[in-house]
Structures are given as C-alpha cells and as structure tokens.
Picture 1 (cartoon, rainbow, N blue to C red):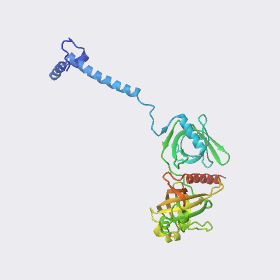
Picture 2 (cartoon, helix red, strand yellow):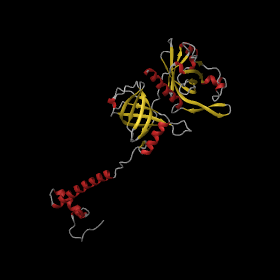
Picture 3 (tube, helix red, strand yellow):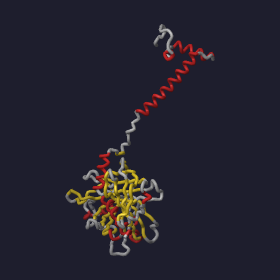
Picture 4 (tube, rainbow, N blue to C red):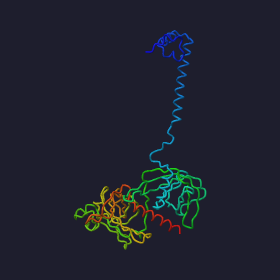
Length: 360
C-alpha cells in the first residue's frame, strides 16, 4: 500500500488513493453529515464514471472495423468484373426475382447479353414477362451460377441486388432489361432448380430399370449393356404410352405411369426404392440429341394408386453417369448433390423455347 503521509494536502483525485481518507469519508457518511470532502468525492466518482463511458464510446466509434464484411461477400471491383464476365462467357442463366418490390410478381429466367461497369448488365428475357417502364428504378435480385473449375462438375452460386436502369422491347419475342452494375456479389447456397414440362416430342427415348433387376442379372452399373430388359420403356408411337415424363429439372423428375403398368410392378414402386433411367432428349440447338443415365430415388407417389388412371411419381436424382475411362466400364457415376448441370441447362433451354413459341 502506498503511504501518502508527508505529502501535505493532497489533490482531490489523489485523495481517492489514501486509505485514511476513505475511512474518514465512511465516518462522515455514516453520521449523515455532508462535508466538502464528501461532495468532492461524489463529484470525482461520477466524473470518472462518465469519462470512462465517453472514452469507451470514442474507442468503439473510432476503431470500429467498418470495412469488415461477411466472408461470403465479394466486393473487389476486379473480382466482380471477372465473375460477371465469366457468367457472360459461360452463357449462365440469371434468375431474376421481383418479389422485393412487387409481392405479386414471380421470378423469371434471363440471359446476359452485355455487361460493363459503366453501362450495367443487359439481360434478355421472354416477351411474356410483362415488363414496363414503371419498373425502372425498382430493385431486382439476380441469381446465377458458374462452373469455375472446368475439370469438376461443381458450381458456385452468386446473388446480387441492383436497380433496373432501362426496359425495352426487342422485336416481338424478347424484352431487354438493363440493371445497374453490382457493388458486391454474395456467394450463396443453391436455389431451386428450374422445372420444365417438356413437350412429348423432345423425349425421344426413356428406359427405366429397378436397381434390384440389374443385380438379379449380375449387371454392372458401369456397363448399360449388362442391365437386361428395362422395367418400363417409352414407346412414342403409342397415344397412351406406359410411362411419360411430366416434368424434369436438374435435380429430379416426375414420371406418369398408366395404372396397368404400375400394377404389374406394384411391389417395386415403394418410396425409397432406387432406379436407373436412360433418357435421350432432343436438342434442336445442337442438332443432335443428348443422352443421360441417371440414378434415381423414389420420393413420392401422387394421387390414388388404387384408382384407375395415371399414377404420378416424383424422383430425386442421386447420381449421374459420365463416360468412363476404365476398360469394360462405359459409365462412371458422379454424385448429384448440386444437380446435373447439363440437364439443368437443357431444361432452361427448353423453358425458353416453350415461351418463345407461345409468344409467336
């Protein structure tokens, strides 16, 4: 303990450190008598309290990390420019949502035509989207995905919010909408896949196997020629084929079965059962069809299976086949945790084609 005796009369603030001074103040306080020393003590205590509070606020304001941003935000102009240019090069679709300003509006899909920091991002969408000049100045949320590693079937998903700068009609079939250049991009989780109801004519072939039937014939999942006879097959020549595709996306599909075809294989169609489907889909833009091998899990059975008519089934895509590099194995299977990119792109092109046709 520091002994302040011998220093004479102490200043008020140093008196706080003198144990004898505190004893005297306690006696005064207990006696109920006010004294100059008591008043000085109270003033010093409250003054010190408020000074400490002021210093704390000053430090908090002055040294607050205002430039700290979430790890999922991309704010560097050069990085934003590179990602948007990649979206333009990869012809990535952009899902545009108007719900922030108009609760009655829906999202729609668009394609990037041009992009520059000085002029913004110009998007093209179907003319069935009833855009008008009242949209100018309103905010839209835009989502898009990029495949940054050409050697991996993985996609990164980005989002930004920007005001609409201009809306113009381009011919009879399209709307061009320009949004402001984003000041930041946000890395996000995958949103829902675009689900499309394809015309019957684009489903060229469909074959469906149950996993157990392939195992029963000692088939190898890497070699479709060993799978044996398909459980169900689409015959496009029939007006009412046994099985049809009702809708499809990069993450799943819904099939419709005639009741008789469903009844014949009733025990195999249970939720959780696994199937493999081979699809051959028309691709007018490329001039040749696209083939897919998909491993499916039966999620739901819709309607009343006991009733006559159609039975609808929802399937989730668990994995997809790509050309294999092992002798005797023509397929190599990859997990579809982020969907099937090529199938998702196909669904988007069919979506645009359908709306273009409706707009004619």
